[in-house]
Length: 257
Length: 305
Ligand SMILES: Nc1ncnc2c1ncn2[C@@H]1O[C@H](COP(=O)(O)OP(=O)(O)O)[C@@H](O)[C@H]1O
Ligand SMILES: [Mg+2]
Image (cartoon, rainbow over all chains, first blue to last red; front, side, top):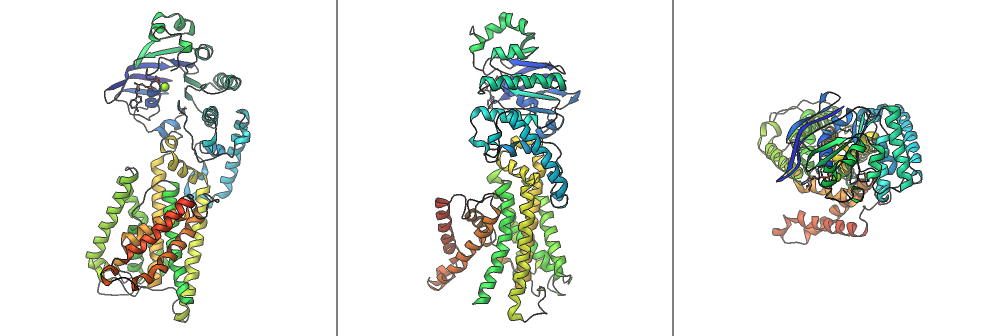
């Protein structure tokens, strides 16, 4: 589904991604781990068109998407969340969600004045959906609050909520569990598994909590210094000496990437 | 005295139209348009050339109806915005502002020097005033106030509807975080272009509204101070992103401007030519007070309507 081929990306003198080649198979929940600074977030940024790679290609659903604009990549069904959450601070929580659906009738200026009725109906549909999502995320009481006032964990949830607003082929999640209370975290992870099982959604997940990764993902790709060190099933990765070395002998589950 | 007040309301309304347009571009989309005067001027001259009677002094004399002048003004301002937008919208923030300021100065030079087109510094006379024949000229102000007030209301309603729609939500998204909006599947460049063109068309309409009131147009009116900076002040005093606020801001700033006219009589002749800047200082002080006491503008509380 997603093929990353010999991607290079450097910032000035820092080589963040170095000849990185990997593949994510359709329908899997693939994990991406590696020590802090390994280049995981940068790889996500390159895949989603936020950064242009220095060299290499990215194929998504057998189409070359290298160098496409982020919005074009989104429209092909590839969505991502951010390690450091991003939200529209001044907009309400609801509006943050309502902005997401693709191809809304009211996104065309002309329609705004001349198709008011169709727009109102579509808005109502999206509103119902957004409220359902907020209910699921246990944030319904905060729907009209400006998103900037949400605590950190709920900003993370809001990002997941944005993901739930659209039908997608694949989602890149950058540390989705960080800062979310454990009960809700389980709920979110269950949801992710369910989406994968029932809708065939493909997920590519960066996560520092090893328990989460080992539970959720198969296979797991290990990155160090901007390229892939190894990949395999959770058992294989867990028992691979090079992986443990890459974490400098630290217990990976305590390592905060 | 009454006619003086009517005239104040007419010009205030025209400024309010321009302020609404800037608020769309800056308040919602984050575009720092410092070339308002350019689009205002383009609209003014387009309508003047299209509607004025036959003359040998310059091109034109098409004698078209005033309505055609307004439509032409919107189309020319919008068309030029489209052409400028291609290179300029790639620039961010302050660079965009300076580019537009430069474009305004360039267009001003063209208007001053290309006499065949604009009659240069002499300006264009004989621009028709709608329904002028049907009333007593003494009361013409009332007629025009109704026209321009109606126009302001119409534009306010159109913009208010647009910014509350999904279209406007995307503009606000771009104003807040362009990258995030792009990664939410919206073609930001296209929306910035739409906002830029739509806003500039409205500025062009404001220009047309001005010349059909005065019946005369010359380059002097379009200096950056009176056609760009003052509109920025109106938006900031009224409250960026607040449509009703910027209308109030337009009338307030214009009132202070008109009210400080008396100063001209008190200062030495040498300074009198630069009185504009002294008066602008007054407006600046008001802006300072507003920002300090009500950072969201004079009508704060009803944000973004
Ligand atoms: N915008 C940037 N400018 C400069 N250096 C960057 C930038 N983004 C990432 N880097 C560098 O690239 C490397 C990889 O970072 P990152 O992708 O964030 O790692 P990870 O997500 O695996 O912790 C780090 O050395 C980081 O300092
Ligand atoms: Mg990271």
